Image 1 (cartoon, rainbow over the protein chains, first blue to last red):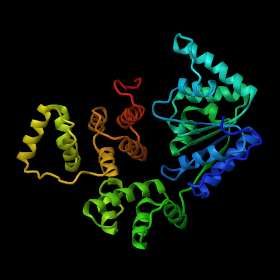
Image 2 (image 1 turned 90 degrees about the vertical axis):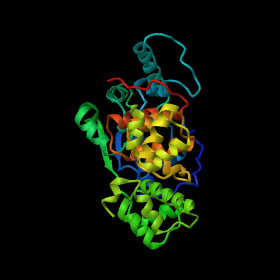
Image 3 (image 1 turned 45 degrees about the vertical axis):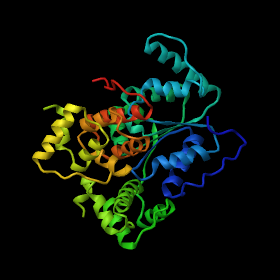
Length: 248
Length: 118
């Protein structure tokens, strides 16, 4: 549980509060207040995970963030929800037995002290994980904010109709606008000429994640040649990303 | 010829050179590779690749080949982090998902059998 009642969390200084961060935190607050399930989808690289990091440190109510990985399973989720940080599960047995025990523990914890469940990269969750989320909603009305890319909506729509029907808001975040992207990149410490930024914008649109990958590659190319990063280095970096080459 | 050598030959030359430099290949594989390189009169890249460059090349390489590089401990923690990020930008398929699992496990310091249930 990340927030303590009465304590005002301090906003981290290393995150620029842009539209993605603002929208995500406001939807988190809404999900908590109304006890809703909300999905927040945005293309890859827009800054969802950064916004989640920001929200985790600033939300003024009880919440728990689960960051999904490819190796996340039903058991991983239940363990994160049912056990306190550092607590170990010592009862041995078959997985399903342990999973059901853990589920009961997690339900008890939510009943005793409700919180908002934030799941980052929810599009990577497996089918049985979504079913468990639905169970949590049905049993204890656990408010949730599910964050992911476009695949999340598609996956929920196609495979998890029962959970899909329980979602109150499906928010689609648009990529950043040109001025916002520039602001984010400058905040991240990348200084660039107008022609460099124009090329970047043409290639990556409103995705600071992609832009960062390109700029870092360009920096390394320039460093290996002993020069300062310029438009040539940036064009050189494009060859590492075959999908961008069609744009240039 | 071993499969890994076949994949290495198909890979981007800079990546192949970097992995050779880092000592990824076993003696027999290395001999095969060097022979092929001599046949194709390929030059040797002197400057090592940077962290993001290396990760970018691995991200766009054949998933099986990239997985081999991860499992043979060729990447630093930073490179693994970047590779993980760059893989997320790509379109997902079964091979990419498997590679992502391998990278995630390597980041946690685990290796070995990482196959998902099929």
